[in-house]
Image 1 (tube, rainbow, N blue to C red):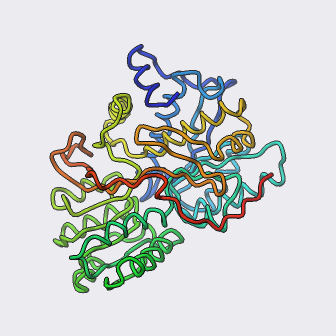
Image 2: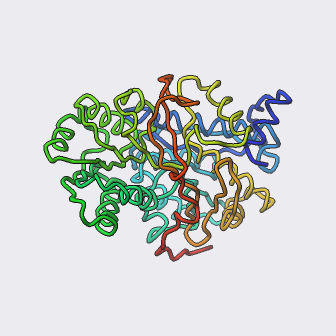
Image 3: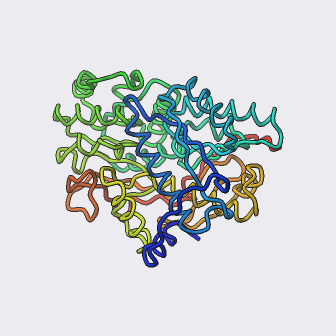
Length: 410
């Protein structure tokens, strides 16, 4: 049963989420930043995972087992992530979730591959909810890794399709974080703009240290000096918050085409000055028309977590599909769940999604959303939020891209 349906039933009958029981608990290791500049992003994601677990536990759990999310602070450091992974393995945990940082995801994929080769019968499955380096479902694909977010190329394809119809945009500035994900965003933007709008001049393309820049004003001033008509960025967490804050303070009133302007704190930094000009490509926004049970789910989450907005819908998709795959497999053994996840089709509040069998990449509807006022649901108590028009939806099938994955299955 879909979590958003379960939410409605729980509200009607007054079900209280069941606390995890030590003996009958299916533990999931959450390995993400809970301190430092990206701590707020990790904390927000953790609370989404915990609420998704509560929703599952309000029913019969996963194959009769209650779910417990066990949090490990990796300080967004790949080496520290491996230390935390080992702690989880030592506790017998066989499911790992992570999303903040493709450098971390890269380290986890390698470590889990090695662990599973060396420990048959004790395999671990990695459910990736936000690390979107395209390599993970192409040349570096792994049977033990499933991604529940659209990758950087899929998102850039949607962004540049929108850009293709904006005749007034002649100059674009690309800025990103200096690691694999930021480089992937820049490469995709450069290639796709050249193919779809060869008349557009890329007047800047630079990377900055991850989580180290305290004031993006010098970068924004370079954008202004270059005459940029639009800015493309994959920045997330503190880096998107501070970038938008600097752009707003500098009066840089051009479209900012983003992946993660919905990150916690970004809306407050943007304020009304960003209305109509800051956009993000994502799997949903809370002002889309959805079945009533989804409203119940969002209301329940935001009531329990009054200081953050419902944002990581893909976390609920991941939990729902994990539940469905375990039911299909009749088991919570990672290898059986993985087999059942391959090719799994699932109906969500925002449309059908499919987990590709050939590379373990989710196919889901995407939306170009615009920061707006006069919204039904606002974010960060601002009276401002995200909306999409009739032509802003990209169907799941249209997000699919060619893959170079040559999956090695056990």
